[in-house]
Length: 414
Ligand code: SF4
Image 1 (cartoon, helix red, strand yellow):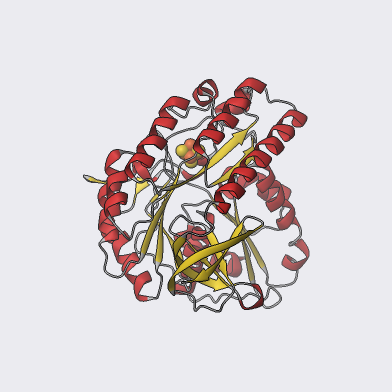
Image 2: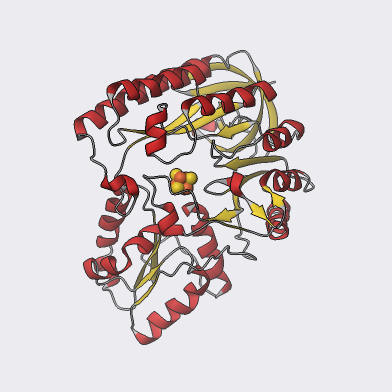
């Protein structure tokens, strides 16, 4: 989401007459887009920004801090890092050009962190890649007890479907072949009477859209209609990213996730029954307050049962202002040990599943050069694949997998 927000900011600034440079020595303005989802992300951002002080103090330079950490810590950033000129929350990017001009002309400091239901409708960032994100909604209403998103990005609001389709048409004309619809919980998309399943169908029917994917689904909200649309449209990839977070129903209740282990496993069954070749990836949080060894073992059992194709695994990070912040955290040692155990356990599953690809044929959309004349592409199941040949980005080929190096399958063009 942040990566996409950076493209929105770039486009807004471009429309205001600013130019992007990759050489900071020539830059007049340095914008740091920040994340608040974990403490570590904030700490890294704060020390990165602190490192810009000397650069900023060269005459005429401006430092702006934007994004979720700017929203959460606005005044605090201004106090701790007084050289920062502009602090903007995620709903204030439309005015960024004006704010920068004000800072520049009046030598003033601006903090704007109000949340106003912005969807950045009508802003279509220019992209160059084969694959790109399209935000369909912003914010979240779910208030999972560990998560800061509803506080720093506001309540959920959906973008009008015609605006989404128009952006996709622009992307397709520009050569993008793989569209990833983006939202904190895409299943909650609703605009007038249009649901996420309706929107997905509309996007799949845009001429020349080669692949459609979507992120993130919430297990409590993914429904039959969406699975049916995926099943019935060749250009919608059969890849579901379905965060588990914990395999223990008691912890899921404490997390305010509104599903149990059994409901989650039923959803996996439903997907696999409808689309046997579907790939499923997940997110897991380890060491949530009060999680016992037995409850952690339940998560491992679910991981073993589902055999996820990939997983993002994190240690629990207490976030001030969230409900879980008030709960007693487990010790660092326990959390670290459980995370190591989970990563080792899941990595073995990933390697085994990748080895199962050997000898099978996959449709691969090639994206970029890899090392030594090789090319990297993606299967419909979102798996990175390497072939030791030069293939132009955007080309689609059938590939037979021959071997696995590390976690990456190496294939040969059919
Ligand atoms: S669904 Fe839960 S975890 Fe995801 S953004 Fe919303 S509150 Fe955070």
